[in-house]
Image 1 (tube, rainbow, N blue to C red):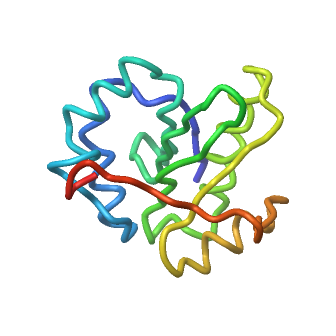
Image 2 (image 1 turned 180 degrees about the horizontal axis):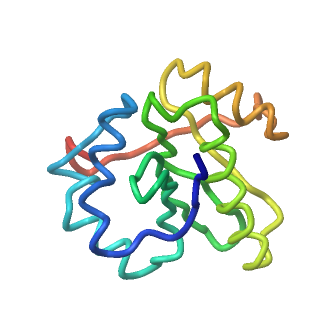
Length: 144
């Protein structure tokens, strides 16, 4: 089976939440993950919505962001039946290509909770755990 990695079209955004849920990622349908928020983010930066497809079936996603200095890979998820075939690596490679094309040389990720599989994936791709950085967040709503 050949996996195709490409930008998601607007008419495919409704499939993203299903991938997140099947992959076990937290999903906030009335907050940051609402269909309206996803459409607004996509409209602003469509190239940052990456999908992996097996025979036209969406099996993995990521949403990249750029803070002006660093590229961030967010919400990377692959459905269980497609894991172990390099789908996540292909999505990461596409995110990194987009960042390089933008002139970014620092790529970052944050991993929620105890997610050993994600840690192993990114460590295997050359990402280093930054032990001297602590992450803080201020959320203006419950579902963010």
